[in-house]
Image 1 (cartoon, rainbow, N blue to C red):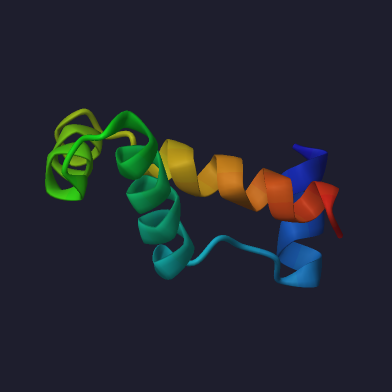
Image 2 (cartoon, one colour; image 1 turned 180 degrees about the vertical axis):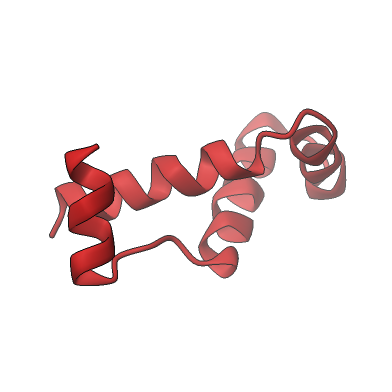
Length: 62
């Protein structure tokens, strides 16, 4: 809850580009095509979870 408020106040959010880069790096590390990873995350409604994770990381580094 506090992180969400800080994120809003400081305008710190993960961008779609960063989510794509994260998924591309994950796909590469797992030796899986990025389109399959993206489809999995979309089909299982996990893209927002990645965005939250990346936003949290940005906040911790703020």
